[in-house]
Amino acid sequence: MIKAGGMEREYRLTVPDFDPETPHPLVIAIHGADGRGFPFNQQPRWEELARDEGIILAYPQSELVRPNEGEWQLNTHEDMMHDIDFM
Image (tube, rainbow, N blue to C red; front, side):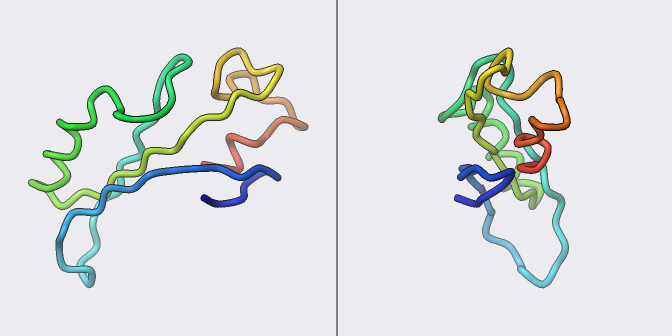
């Protein structure tokens, strides 16, 4: 958990076993629509790719905050930047 935009936010990481001294790419996997939680629909394939290619995966979790149209803030207003702050 981290605090972002005044809210406690959750994320999950998949970090394959590789040399920590070597830079590795990061892929941020975001659920669409009103989806949240695990398993992420394509999670097994992403994790296989992460192991094979040395990719770190981050799965940020959405929060339903009114007046969001879904669990992610789609129409960002200056006073509703919690998802932008989180990312």
